[in-house]
Amino acid sequence: MRINVNNPVLVKEVKLRFRSLKSFTGILFYLIAMSIFVFGYIFVTTAFTGTGFFRPDQSFLLFGLLTFIQLGLILFITPGLTAGSISTEREKQTLNMLLTTSQSSLQIIIGKLSSSIAFLVLMLIAGLPIYSLVFLFGGISPGQLGLIFLFFFLTMVTVGSIGVMFSTIIRKTIVAMIATYGTMIFLAGVTAFFFIITIQVNMIGSGAAVTPAPLAHFWASINPGILVFTLLNPTTEGFVNELTQIEFPIWAGYTIFYVLISASAILISIKKLRVNMKRSK
Amino acid sequence: MIEIKGLTKKYGSFYALNDLNLSLSEGTVFGFVGANGAGKSTTFSILATLLQPTAGDAFINGKSVKNDPHEVRKQIGYMPDFFGVYDQLKADEYLDFYGASYGIPAAKRAELIPQLLELVNLTHKRYEYVDVLSRGMKQRLCLARSLIHDPKVLILDEPASGLDPRARVEMRDILKQLKSMGKTILISSHILPELAEMCDEIGVIDGGRLIAHGSVSDIQAQLKGERLISVKLKGLTDRAMRFFEEDPFVSGLEQHKEKHMITFKYRGSEDDQMRLLKHALEEQLSILSFAEQETDLEDVFMEITKGVETV
Image (cartoon, rainbow over all chains, first blue to last red):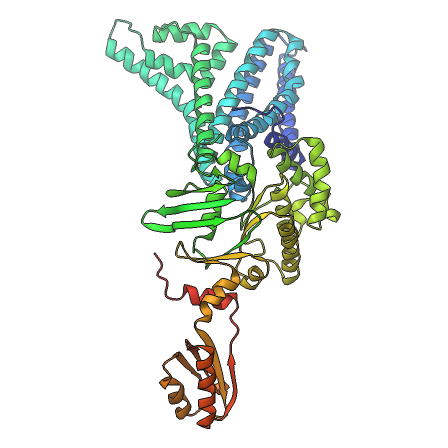
């Protein structure tokens, strides 16, 4: 299979997306919300302390809060952008014509996924000047910011791939969206709950002796919230490792799991796009 | 050019298509006639590589739709019966997107698009958004889209459906032009006289089975063995009814009292028909007219599909 760098679906999707007023207003309100939060926080902090300055530890706290807000936005927006990518074409009766072109299923799926991710990346980049404001006050290293953005990117690709997969295998956009949001809630929320439960069960089961809890470590590794904590404050990872008695890095587990999920979701989408064909090149 | 062998599509125990066999040579314009749900769109969807047959196979220019769909897609231009357009694209961008999807280089696309828009009489709408075009214009644009990669075979599922008479005439003219360009065209339509005018061959499908196939004149000639005769009388009488009923070649006798008319099917030769008329005049049946009714494609369709069991 060959990936055409000049992907027609990507070009068309980008054109359609950026011509819509929704995209413009989406980015506008996102930036307004971010600005209100950042400047509001700085104002409140400096006004109430009466000192007129902003300490590095407060800057770090702001950075942490912003990271969680952006993670929430990614988890909230990505399913909305991707879970209708194929099913909307089906509902609008444009899919059959697209499927009879020479484009491979891989090209179509990658085109759809990358156009959604391109929009999210644009949102993140547009918010970067506000995000970078924390550098003015210190407490954050550029490496940390880079790592956070890599984590955002991987999470976007994974949630996006899951959205495209559900959009391909489920005929109705609304059902595909519910399935994608459900998966996202599972990954972001239910895994944290399972982590706590498995740790508790392990403690009760082993009594005084401390035994390794691989399942608990697995739940911790696939939860984006826990990974953000470990990226922001590396001591958190030591705490999790102590609880589970497993030394495997959280970021490595997260990367492996999310890359595998993305690859599987993309493969399923490619296979199911032309669902009735014996062989699709 | 097109070879369909034992094509079958089953949904549970329902046969949407049952052992369809068909062979069409290059440049043929083939009209697919059939009622709703007869299997026309299923056949077209299989040929367009959108549906996998339960059994059998179809070959387009020697390429199997089952085993070589990628190659088949390059050979066909498909226009579905229902289709949508992308709201935020202009007519030329719409064609450009599909051109790129067929791997046509940008420079070649820039050359092709004005030519195609001219072919379908949409040059003046080149920079209009496609969602504001009328239904007829969208149909023509979709036809232009299916031609962008210069396919050898065109599969057009009800291209004239939902169009007003003027738009239908425009569509028919374009199709005639494509026929003159030597394209092999498979077309389905409910407007049967239109098919008769432009098709070299027609196939009648009912209940998933191809129940008749041949040229329009061949199929009409098959029915000529049983001509439809109408007799107008000055006042209907039982005597006249009895007279025609007694003839051994007459069947399906019907009385239309309000029109003072009798219609029946006649299986005899032309000489027999002549003798029948002569005999009727000798019997002084007050005949105002005695005429053989012309059979058009709709009659052919109704006649052929009558009594065919749906599987």
